Structure formats: C-alpha cells, structure tokens
Image: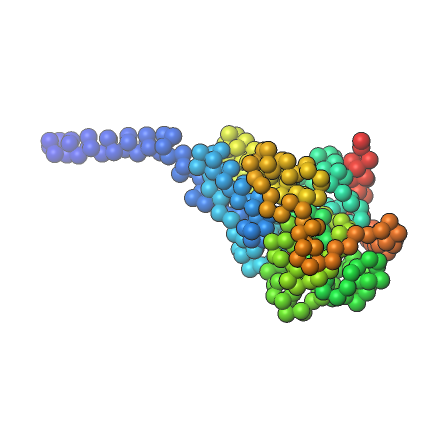
Length: 360
Ligand code: X2X
C-alpha cells in the first residue's frame, strides 16, 4: 500500500467516525423533527381563538427549546377555505395539527355535534363539567379512533345571533331571515326548524356576504363578533347562548405518538396553558371577573374589551336577552331536532353529557 492510499484511508475513517458522531449526537436532535409543523385554524390572528393559537405556538417553541416549530395557516388557507375539511386532512397527515372548532371537526367526529344541540348546554358551568367529565373523555377517545390526538379544550364560545333587520325576541322574529350558517347540517336543520332561511357558507366568504347584504344575519360568539366588528353590518344581536363551540387542539396521532415522551409532555402542557389563556379571552366580561382576573394574574394581560355587551352597545348595537318565556318558546320549537340528532351523536354520549351537567 502506498503512503498516499493509507493516508486517504485514514482520512476516510476519520470522516466516517465524525458522521456517525454527528448523526447520533444531541447536536443532530433538531434534524429528527420537521422544519415546520403545519397547523390549520379557521380564523385569523386577530380573533381570540387565533390569539390562543399564537400563544400555543410560542409555548411549544419555548417548552421544546426550539425543537418543535409550528406554522399557523389562518382562514383554513391550506383547505382553500373549506373549513369542514380540517379533521380529515389532519387524520391523513396532510396537515400536522389543528386549533379547531368542534363544529368544523364534526364531519369526522359526529359526537362533537353534542355541543351544537340547540339549548342543551346554556352556560359555562355546564360546558366545563362536560369537558372535564365523561363527555370530554368519550370525545377524545372517538378522536383517537379516527387518528387524532386531542390535547386540550379551548373555546370559540356560546354563539349569539346578529342581523340587520330586527331585534330577535321570539322564534317568530326569525321567520324569513336569511342567515349565514356554517355548512354543518345541524345548523341548517336548526334554522329551518325556526322558520329562518339558512344559507351555508364558509367563514372565508361570510364577511363579503355581510358587506354586500347577501344575507340578513349570522351567528357567532363574541370572540368573532368583536374582532370582525359586526356592528358595521348588523344592528341587532340576541344573546341567547343557544349552543357553544369549544375549540380542540389536536394532532395527527401517528406523528404525535412517534414523538419522544418529553416532547409529547411539552406539547401537551403548551396546549393546556394556551387553552386557559384563550378560554379566558373568549369568556372575559361574560363570567363576572373570573376570566378577566385569570388574564391579569396568570398571563399579565389586560383585556382590550372587558365588557363585550357594553362594547357592542357603545357601537350602536341593540343587544337583546331572552325572557324566560321566549327561551321556552325557542326550546319548544327546536326540541324535535333531538329525535334526529341524538341518535347521530350517540344515545350513550347524550346520557353522559346530561349526567356530567347534573353533577354538583
Ligand atoms: O364559521 C364560523 O362561523 C366560525 C368562524 O365560528 C367557525 O369556524 C365555526
């Protein structure tokens, strides 16, 4: 062997050893993960739900020492606005994760329609009992079966109806109103039952429809109504808490399960913490001082709109609350929907939800 070739062999061995070292050393840890994890959500960063998603991304980055980087795709942009496709795409792994409303996830997880049963849950206490109880567990289990890992419960909120024609005080007032609703079938059923004329439309098209007066009204929680400045289009809102949409942070199960335990733990903690912040934004001023104090004391955050009802009134809106009689009339008008929808949701889950709400 010549001197030159043994020198070359020596160099080759050194290079090989160094590559093995680099591949298995902690320095290459970052290479184990994707450069960017794609997250879908149906709204933009200025919505309370979008602000929660941003918090989640920051916390994940912080708690994984920069190893896991999430990129948000707002306005269901990865789905060309087709908001109801998010769970299917996350289950397939085309999108890694979602910070998404239960309404938008219900095409894959029909159990989530439990939150869309009209006049079933009615208040935050009931909702919390369901999420923390057997209902929440059952929903996360149903998600796992479809290839999704639920990480935490955030919120969009109790949905309130707005329109440009008249104050809605009783079911009669809804008659003939053309209302934009989400494309989820239970919404069409509910508003048809109430005699309105529901038009299903993706959120991405909704604001243009309000501007052009293609529809008379719509329904959404304050966390959407205030950022979108709904008073620009509609003078009337009725706070009827007729149903609620929690937001669930979920990840493709195969991908999540493949993460090391410490990464999983960090992501779960980030999800829970961001959800606490996001829920407080959505509830601020609607649950006394509770959520306002959570924001101030735990997140050093002063709420820009501490009283959503007063805020909407100050913008010239007429805000209506239902009398007991009116509420009963709405309940009576929508109860027949349960015959169709409870079997789709599952009798068992419906019983679990009722039992959760009855707990002290
Ligand atoms: O489409 C809606 O109304 C919205 C923004 O609330 C949801 O994504 C469920």
